[in-house]
Amino acid sequence: MSKKIVRLVSVIFSVIVIAALLCSCNGPKMDEPVNTLNINSSASNVARGYYESVLFNDISLFEKCFPEEFLNDEGVDVTEIFNSLRNSNLLDGEFLGSAYYSSVAFTEENGYDYELMRDNISQYHNVDRDLISDIMIVNIKLFIEFEDSTNYGNSDVLCYKYDGVWYYYQAQ
Image (cartoon, rainbow, N blue to C red; front, top):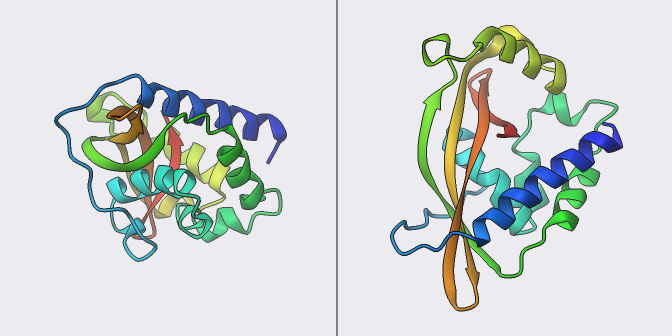
């Protein structure tokens, strides 16, 4: 994976985390943390698990966000990606957890080019496009304690179901 892509992913991750610091929160509640046993069971779990893995410093959870085909790709260094995300984390507070907020199917009916996205996922994650059965945009909340108050930010995450298992593709 090129250094430019790693840097771009790091910048996007940092912007989303910083945005989380700027939103005060009194209402929404955090969900139970995702773990390696349930991360791939739903689009919302893999979306939440992606952020939780980085912000809780859990590389084994991070690796579960991606299919074996991606992890075994010769040009991919998952440890480098993980460390880059960890190093780009500009939190000036404590990450507390996350919560599922909403989701929308990535379909033609909802105004998205489903077939093109299947092609993109197949190319970048090195998976068989015919085994991609669902694509979802999941909106999650990230909770951060900052200066004695709990704040949250939202993130839209594109996830896909490949061969019956949910994986992370990208933050929107």
